[in-house]
Length: 167
Image (cartoon, rainbow, N blue to C red; front, side, top):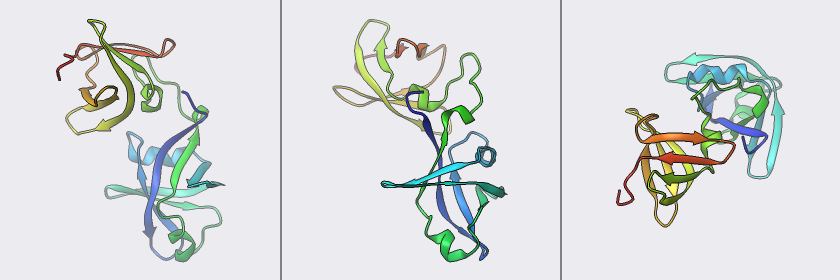
């Protein structure tokens, strides 16, 4: 990973009157975000380290109780804050599995040698994930390993794709 910290979600609202917050989790199993305590909360240039005391899945969202956050008004102040963790808190990715943070910034080249630019971000679409590549123009490439994604070399900082330059 290129940074020591990784974004894993954001505070999306308040839950109840006792200081619980709603969390929009970026983790594949949404409630896994609760296992990565402590969190670094960041908004703009301000950041704070917080311990996760309790939490659970609640419908399509996750709710969490943080140490020292004991009322609704304090919880409301955290709305919109980004949730970050240290990269070493994440389990090591298995062979041919990647954290999105590892892919952002990779140079993307087609099998015919065309340089498409760099991975700007990843998108979850439901059917399959999509690589957003920024270059002379933006390209959206389906993240289908063994099909459109031929090879990923994190050491070299490159992703090789089977994708037509006209798409």
